[in-house]
Image (cartoon, rainbow over all chains, first blue to last red; front, side, top):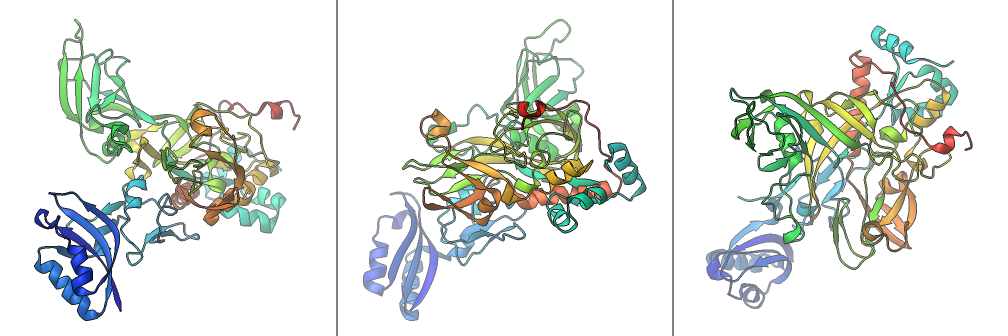
Length: 136
Length: 395
């Protein structure tokens, strides 16, 4: 079993198709939806954790990309802008996974992309706008 | 033996001054003892870097050939309204001012992307901002309309003037309600979901001079990258709050009005901030040197986070409306900095809006500047109001 956190961007034409249902039934993947913003008729974005065997994962991802859904690894989706960050720690208690954490000796805040689930709570909470949603 | 400011300044000039930060001094005083440390150490530097809403700047904008009287008229900088109720060319911009078209909290919680603090930060960064002004016109100031991109070079004076900075201590904010709330202490999760505080604690200027013995009117300070001054006590300065045995207040208490030349400031030490659902503010860096005149001063500056206490206040009811319990508890800064505090049997994760690492950087920078002979200490020319009980000698 392998797990992969990915960000799915749906074009408007795909927003009303039951794509997640197909991932589960046709490709045998376990899908944990971490965040979703989908407006009918507009673009949709979804952060999901997919678990399955290697082949299930690769077939599932091929199905998504072949159908026009853009798939990207999650880590790229949040950026911690160190030059803007003042290490005030406002984000630390808000972050549910300790992806944003402070070293209690140096009092410097750091970001661990591995732990981030892109819940985006920090984006609203950071007074210095030092956490940004990464837009390619 | 007691020292004087003049003696300390002589040592600064001769390069023999002994300086520690308010964090370093804790160990020094512990190892040497207060008596010996007071004799050997001349200055202790403090620091803080935190949002301070009551901040803003006076500008005197250079006139064009045809003169204009902004006073009594109307003006904006990058669409942010500025105060034009002074003479022809003097205006004031407040950190929290917002452009007319900002939706505020109509789209709750509001985003507050741009405001007065951003204008100030952009100017200090060397950028130009759009001045738009409308005046009624007089015989001596005929011009009625002005639109011009201006920078700090287009101003005769640009003065940061902050009526309330450096709160001596501050509330720890929590939320007892069942909904998230958006406050100037950040987003507070429902049912005591988190606790936010805002102080540099043992590094904070007024925590190290709790009775305002050395910090007074005229005290020279580090302000946003340059040397500024204490102009007055800050607004809401309230020395008569309950204090601990070490004389530090158990809530807000003292504040400072600070003034300095904006043209000399560094954008690294003056930053616009946004509080979702609340508004815009300005983060200000302040460092104050404390002269170690005697043993009492050494005792004061050696105070540790474990000996400083802050009240825990509910921002869903008590703070906004005065209804409910005034104080849910009292915690030390050491507890706050550990990452969790316990309130009503619940463990709350803590977050801070005052950057401790930046406060440390300010105190270290000020220490270097003093050691290099580039910062001389001042005698204050007037005292800040102190606690009545101390004045009467009853405590």
